[in-house]
Image (cartoon, rainbow, N blue to C red):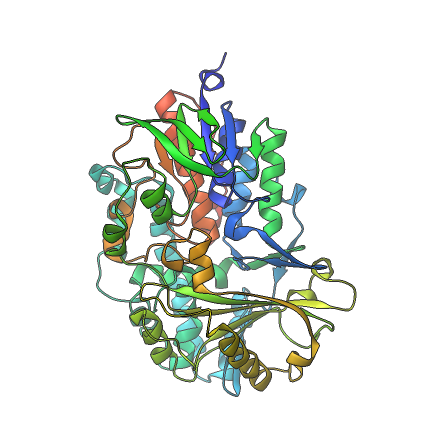
Length: 509
């Protein structure tokens, strides 16, 4: 019998990290039980249903698709066996008042678009792409390894990447090397929102985020990106994994440095040889460790990302002339970001992201209708802003702004159903301080200084998700699931065959 067949792994949470770990560990021969508190899989990568409308709860951009492809390939199938991908070109419309820029993953086409909107700037774009191809080749391998020991810093790969990491420059600073036009800098820095951070404070190494989009593209999945989670769950159960929905965990069971299992809210005990925690990191650390919790006061001293104010709208028409992804920048974007970073002030001059996926996807709304997903980055709940008494007013400000700045001039007249999720709602769903992008990605909360994939203080507890290494965003969360799965295999002496698709992409960069 394979050594893995004798070992039982319990995974807490069926978000993208937990599902990744479940797929890989089940394929490698472990007996795996995955418990999820909700009645559906996905977590923030799950599905919200409003009548006949289907919405992604969280992520709507799939970039670095090759990372997802690797996860499926490691289990003996392809992502295309389960998912219908749409390579979006243009990817996004970026708008500043009366100026708009369409973004493309075709370098030549993007250079033409930049030259048309910002004359004289295409040369800087081509330099950016050439320089960041090399930067990406150096940094990407560092995101595939764990940093649970200080000696991890001695890896040759990390040493080669250190010039890009050990700098006090920000993403915005880096873009100043290539562009003079402030709006164009923002076109290459807004991706810092995937980390819930300001481009003026986000570490310079994350300038690779925009490169990955402009080089490898942004994908939609027909039916919504939540279909990825459904597909992962299908593969997991096909491989023999035990998926148990509506099974919230009350606490982990601890004996010394060992997690022996978990007690569910219904008092059922599940024993395990190792536990993977995919619940929100800060919530888990402060609530689930059965007498060994981190205090909330201590956790609140750490730096957390911003939150998001969400509107999910069912519309009785389709705005065919509007883009799939549209970002409306605040008039004073820097002031808007400063308000968010202060964690105190809710901006009236806000930036707004609108997804109008029905122009490419007929599967998410009834015929002739559409669903609009609207996201506004805003403050987390650190200082207790009263969202309950302000959410309706704030929603109306957002909708009026969309009507004024897009072709959806009659939007409010066509809303047939809607749902609002505020930062306070995120917090009530077990997301610490409502920080939807988890711990901030500061230099003091990265690599070894971020919560480890093998959770410090325990021999058999592993973390996956945005709160551990490599960080938030779908590709890095998938990678966290793979890193922790590999560590579990090392702990129990189980061999596995990795799949490497990324190297070919790195060579082509």
